[in-house]
Amino acid sequence: MTRHPVKHDFPPSRVRRFLEPGPIVLVSSRWQGKTNIMTLGWHTVLEFTPSLVGLMISAGNHSFHMIRASRECVINLPTTELVDTVVGIGNCSGAQVDKFATFGLTAEPADAVGAPLIAECHAAFECRLFDDLMVDRYNFFVFEVVKAHVAAKPEHPETLHYTGDGVFLRSGAPLDKRALFRPEMLG
Amino acid sequence: MTRHPVKHDFPPSRVRRFLEPGPIVLVSSRWQGKTNIMTLGWHTVLEFTPSLVGLMISAGNHSFHMIRASRECVINLPTTELVDTVVGIGNCSGAQVDKFATFGLTAEPADAVGAPLIAECHAAFECRLFDDLMVDRYNFFVFEVVKAHVAAKPEHPETLHYTGDGVFLRSGAPLDKRALFRPEMLG
Image (tube, rainbow over all chains, first blue to last red; front, top):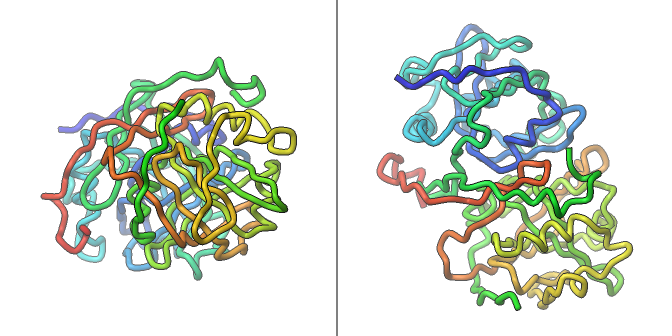
C-alpha cells in the first residue's frame, strides 16, 4: 500500500516552489457526483498573488468537460514511486473507468472546492477557475490556487518530468545558488 | 571557455521533448539593432502542430517590450554548467547591460527570425508570436516554434529547474516506461 504523506497548509502564493520545476501532475475533478483524474504535463505558473496557474487540458479528455462545468479542480503532485499509476491514469478515460477505484487511490475531501485531493500525493493545490478566455482557442484554463497542502518531508521530493515517448526524467539533486542572487529576488 | 554544442535541425512538432520537463530557459531577442537575454521559468507547451508554446514574460522585463515589438524570440536551453550565467542574466536588466557581452555568450544568427541563438546552449527554438490575446491581461505570449536546433549529445542534457528562493533542481536519471504506454500514446 502506498503511503499517505501528511500534508500541512502551505501559502498559495508560494506554489511555484513545486510547479515551476515542471513536474507531471495529477488533476482531480468532481462533477455531478463523479470523480476523475487526469495526468497532465502542460502547465505553467502565471502569477504569485493571486496565485495563478495555467493548465492546457485537451478537449479530448473526459476531465475537460467535468472541469469546465464545475469550474474547479485539484492539482496533485505525485512522486516517482507513483510512476506506474501516473502512466496508467493517462492510458485510460474517466468515461469508462473510475480512476480512484481502478488505481487504488484515496479521495480526500478538499477544504474550498468539491474536487477531491489524492491522499497518496506529496502536495495538493485546490483550484478555482479564474479565467476561461483561452479555453475555446487553446484548451488553456487559468486557475487560482485557493488552498495548498504540502507534506513537510522530504524537502525536495523526487518528481516526474515527462519528455514524451514514454520516458520521464526524475528530478535530481538541488543546486543552491542563493549567494548569487540579489536579495530582492529571493523569498 | 564554454563549449558551443553543434546543433542539428529538429522537428518543431517535437520540442515538448525538451520543454515539457520544465527547464529554466534563456529567451533571446533583438529589436532596433540591440539584443537581449532573459531567464525564464514560466512556460508551457500548448500544441504539437502548429508547435505552440506559451511564455509568461513579466512586463517589468526589458525583454517584454523588445519581444512585443519585434514579435519574435528564441528559446534557448542551457545546461547545468551555465547555472551562474543563468542567475547572472536574471539579476540584471538589458536596459543597462549588453547581456551577450557581459556574460561572454555568443550570438549566432537564426534562420527564420531576427533574434539570435545563444551558441553555448544545448538547444534553440526560433519563435514567432502566434497570439497576443493574453498579453495585456497576463503577460502571456503564445509563440509558434518555426525552427528548432538541438545538439545530438547528450540525449538527456542536465537541465535546471527552478524552485524559487535561489534553489534549482538538476534534472536526474531517465525512467523509461514505454512498455506501459498504449502504442498510440508514443512517438
